Image 1 (cartoon, protein in one colour):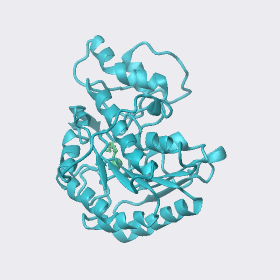
Image 2 (cartoon, protein in one colour):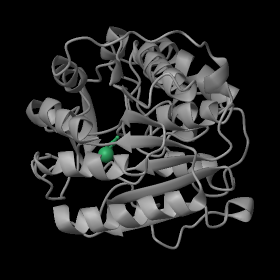
Image 3 (cartoon, rainbow, N blue to C red):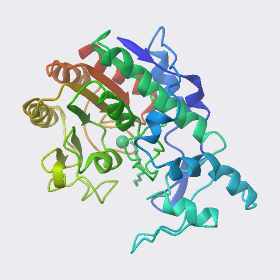
Image 4 (tube, rainbow, N blue to C red):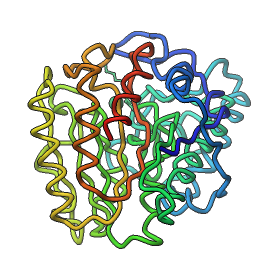
Length: 334
Ligand code: Q9C
Ligand code: ZN
């Protein structure tokens, strides 16, 4: 399988995150990608497709914010990574903000997504990695590709970051795929609901979003991913959420995956983007499903039964020492 990775994705390395009321070590570490990359002999480097395919998914103002936020933070006399503390949730107004703190709050929904001097560089190449994996699949030169994206993307919306995500790599690839495929499906099998991806395509009829994730009633991102969220307007019925209770193991997981895949197939998808998270693993330090490393081969095989051109994009997964094995199992099964 074609695999894509770029070292520039490793530069982004926040010091800490605010978790359950305390500063803890940043879970989305560069080591995650390093460990996965070790499982492959050779990985291709991404091409540079520039800003345009990113800017059709993300707002220009948000992209400008991401590029300048760290400098503005420094100019404000701050130390460490840039992080927000005030979020305009009620009657948001389209103000132009002056202070960096106001800008960060207006472009994020949590405090788990700090901006460092290198965040833009890494997020940019993470998006290019997804776009580069897509190319051979889209042109019919390969049936599938694996984009080792990092930072991950599925929590990022058109104009906001969150959940370790800045640019929505899967959404950027799915949108680019629309150049040649009329119907594109995104299957999100990260432990967490892909709220950013859902939001980007919520009212569209041309990109199907299906997600299996921990019930938002008990798990991050809390506010999105309930079964009753099914899309809006022209997109009604083109979003499918399949939340599972904590503790889900392989039998239940694969039954649920069968539902997601048959919905995607019935809808008539011509190309599939998989948001793959390894945080469904039993040993994941921040998650509570019960999949074992050996389960991922069967899951990969099941996804492949859809028999559509497929781009697999890396999302979460924090059991660093196991990530290479989990991704390896999934891809070999696929
Ligand atoms: N106490 C991804 O897997 N922290 N993002 C949750 C719960 C944020 C996960 C805190 C988790 C984000 C791509
Ligand atoms: Zn996750």
